[in-house]
Image (cartoon, rainbow, N blue to C red; front, side):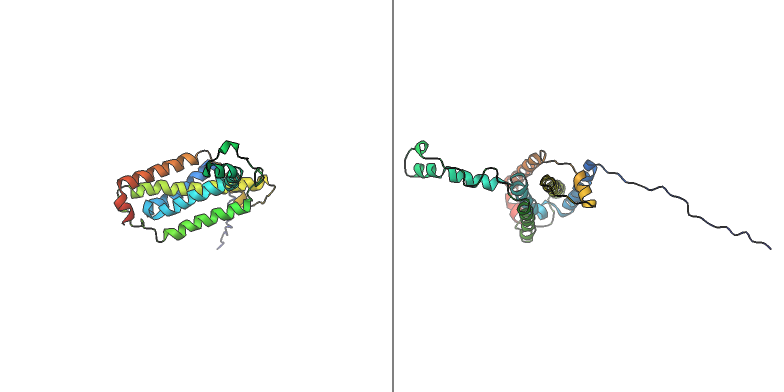
Amino acid sequence: MNYEWLTLMPLAQAAITLSLSGFALLVILMAIGAYGGYQAGIRNILTIAIWSIIAYITCVQGGNFLVDLINRFWQNGPRLVAFAIGNNPDAALRLDPLIEPGFQVPLFFRVVSFIALVLFGFFFNRKAAWKGPPKEPLAKPLGLFVGGLIALIWTNASVVFWSDFQSNGGTFGGPVATILNTLPDVSLLLPSLIAVFFLILIILVVFYFPRVWKP
């Protein structure tokens, strides 16, 4: 009796490449943040959101805010003194800038400060007075919005820092660099979303003030 042996050869398979646009990737990251915010409720991520916004305004969009503030106080110092003692402020001397106007806050300092401020949010969130289970009807839907906003802030901060890093001549490769090069810069959109966040916060404080502070 003869047996016919069959040799099974693996079938040749074409490589599967998953291509995502920067916008689609950004939406995915925001969806992850929104899901986490929905599960937690707005109470439990409110402190993180506030500190993330502070970090973004001071370290990303307002990286040179502190330098400009110091220069203004220094240059107008004589006028402020003249006004305080009852003299004519316009007659007082205006000083030259204390710090060179073209001075740029070092990128490393901005990145470290951003991370530190966000970590402050996690630290203070542990014992925040308004933390509690999402019992209110809008707690989870608002948590969805705030969670997506937090993810958008962190993502855009990374994109802006990466762009500044490249502008200064820095470069490195790898998947992280590929992702950062793909993600869009939505710096123009974020101020409006932050304004909406604070508007929602003001409405909550006005209409639900007793409940905000008591879980």
